[in-house]
Length: 169
Image 1: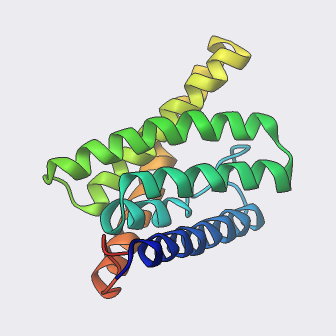
Image 2: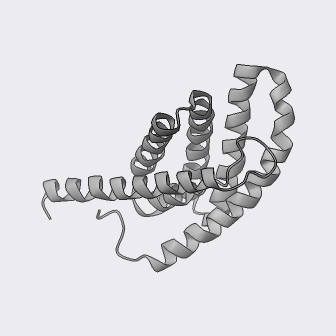
């Protein structure tokens, strides 16, 4: 396959996964929160996990970044975008390292990603709002671990069933 064709497939794949991420982010806005403002399930992380395991780290970064930008443009919440950026940067770093170690399943990688994402969000909140935002961390961690487990299970099932998507894209 020519390098132009590989690049075209990669762009198309990233675009498709970004669209699915964005759709899952939108679905989350329709679901009730868990009693805490701004708490979401992180369903878009399923696509990011898929990209980490089947594509490249760079693809996962692009997909996550474009999704955050699209959410900010469409839903217009700058503080939400800031929280997402802090969480995504830390989460992607942690998930990359754990995945690269080869010692963790998609569930373990997703659990860590959920916890670290919440730490990043609270760090952003502390910077923007002050140390009182730290009180938000315990419930976020509990909910983040629950949703991280679910997302890791779903990503694992998808990775096991979707064959033919790999680094050849």
